[in-house]
Length: 183
Image (cartoon, rainbow, N blue to C red):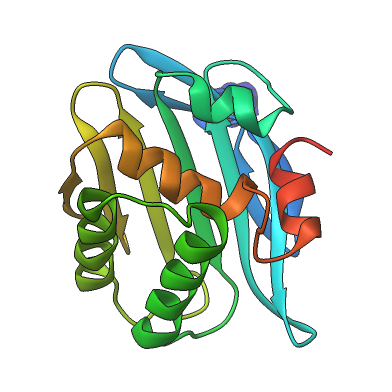
């Protein structure tokens, strides 16, 4: 009995700590990116026509609710999209382009090319799949789909435009933005 209790305690201590749950999706309370320890800033639910599409999680070096300060800061950050339904890659890419146009209307040719590359990395997703976007200063934004790295897109301007899709002036939904910003 004592061994079982010790084993249970060891398992609980080894398990990642979950900070939050939204729409049945649990996200870790922190993420290690190189030497940076990021904290879960907030979680938000993306809906479309009343259907749940994905739960987003925003990780930052420290909690922050001001989108302008988040985008101005040149430090590591991450967004997780945990899908709760199947979505085709074309619809996801359309969302990227719409988000870019709405939140970074004067995007440079380099940023637009970055979004084209992002679309080429995008795959059809199913319930439970994740897309993870990790910005590392001086390196760029790594894009991972379904647990596999697809590549890194260089430049802070691209990272800022990508993160603005969720926390900029015209996010997919106000509720998603509010949740990601910790509200």
